[in-house]
Length: 477
Image (tube, rainbow, N blue to C red; front, side, top):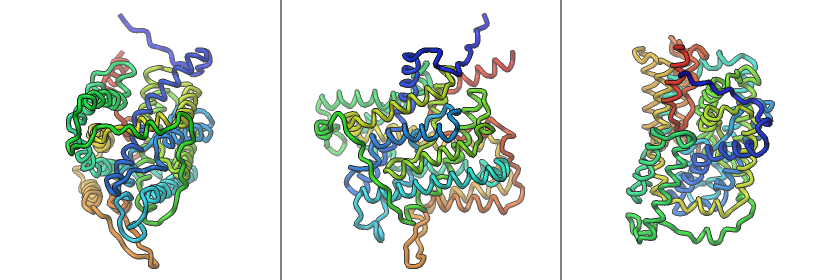
């Protein structure tokens, strides 16, 4: 018996206020797990490098505020037409880790929060790069711009982002392998066999279930591998129920800017892929109207704003695209409701304090999947765009990017006008890849020729096997 196709809802107001609020909560939970994981991971980097975690800036509360307010900024810039939610970008994790470990020059005796402030200054500059690309696309067109940023460049860069963080995942997981393996197993189970909403929030389920297991083990008297307690709840008792997020103004340093800003090359490509995916999901060409230049401007504005107040970079979230597909409610008003919920939650410090008690081992278990998925997405980007690696030019570009991205562990440091500047491995890889692609003959990539490939750049974990099979069945009818 043929199943009746569910008609999409483009104006959610006809569902009533209560259902709109429920749909908004659903979108908030879809982004929640991945979004709050970024400040937790970053705090771990600074604790590992400096012996103390962040106490201001890049906190869970600031991150939620940036996600919610950044989403509203994006909707204003895109004429309230695009149903996209902006959450924390994982692409910048490598940059935060690098800044946390800077120990020369002015960074040698710098406090943890000052280092974070300089990293956020780099995020601000990265946001401004979105405006540059948006302006270029507006003036010359998206097809000409994308010729310089084909998958043979962006794919290997994304692969390097994930692989450069692999050591951190193992180090964190080794604190308590039981918790790490529980988190990893739960994510895999929900990602492969999850049903309904659960299949699009495997990371959140992994965090919640492994946290419960950790509480049980803590009550039983089990400790971490080094003998420390699994939980420390002193910060929860001190946290108030209502309060302002721990905002921190950004600071500027050329070295930190050169660490963070080049990562925007990868995130801008991720943005373009997400816009392609959202357009395909809701059957609206948002690249044409309101235009890719407007969506890039909105994403860049949100990222720059987050950097100003001490938050992580934002990016359009594939998790919420999955919710659009699941619910068939395409009204951007529902996304804006989710954004308001995130803002309200950012003013409840008690929630942030509870989240901050997350055991390091759970973060490690989640990172096993997350960092691997980032690299796997880069591989998928190369495969789905049919990059011909039998061509010498493509092998040269990819090979040089890999060696630069993984070989220059400490980057390259040089002096300009008495100022010490460090180019990180990822920055070197990006510069080398773009340069080689520009000068070597035989670039055969054309943006828009393979929409599925163009839409494969989003970094997120979601089970899409059933949706792909459903699409194939509908095409065959």
